[in-house]
Structures are given as C-alpha cells and as structure tokens.
Amino acid sequence: MSALQDLRVLVVENDEMSAALLQMQLVQSGALVVGLAASVAGALRLLEEAAPDVALLDYRLAHNETSEPVAAALAARGVPFVLATGMAAEQLPVAMQSGVLLIKPYLSAELSKALVRAVGRSSANA
Image (cartoon, rainbow, N blue to C red; front, side, top):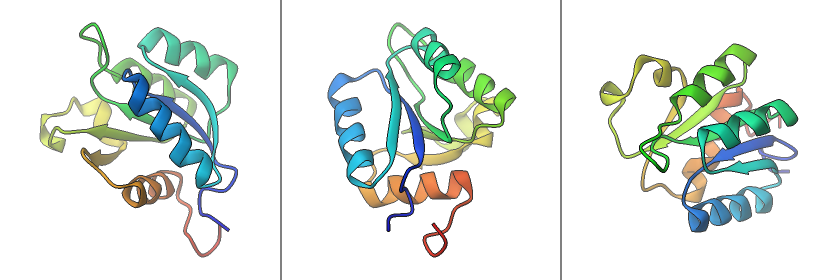
C-alpha cells in the first residue's frame, strides 16, 4: 500500500498543466485530491469546504500573489504543507518556513516523500 493512500491533499498551483499533472501523480499514488486552486482566494475557499490532511503549495501564484496567506490559514488549522519553489529556504518569509520545502524541479518520488514527511507518516506504517 502506498504511503499516500487515502491522504487528503489540497493543491495550490496556478499553472493548469502543472496542477493537472500533480493531480494525476497524487491519484496514482493513492491520495485523494480534495481540491485544486490557482489563487489565494480559491485556496481559502477550498480550505473552508474541504478538510485536507496536507496541502501542496506553489509559492508564486498568478497576479503577483504568493501562497503565504494560504500557509497562514493552514497553520491556524494545524494542517501541514509542502512548499514547492525554486527559492532557497533563507529567501522565504518566516511563515513559509514551517512547511516541508520541495525544491523545483522535483521528481514524483520526491513529492511523495515530502508529503509523507509533512504529515509524519512513514512508508512502513501507512
């Protein structure tokens, strides 16, 4: 059984192609994608409607937005997140540093490991 089996994931990614590929990878790994959002407003709306176990956040979104407000809302709810970015950890705002950092570009296996790390699961007991 996959370490991601039945893990409820919220994906915040403004690039439609990347979001579709991420959704496909996650579903193939056994995860449940509870929503795809391309903006802060969309992500916050989905966070109210869905109860994700973890979120995958792209740092830079469209229209000069960042996912920082989403990370703050997740932290307030105790929901861990993985932050996908090309930036180094020390370049990120403090609020974003509580997430598991996933440096772009990354492989599917690296994504799975980061999500597992974020939720504190291990492959052995998932």
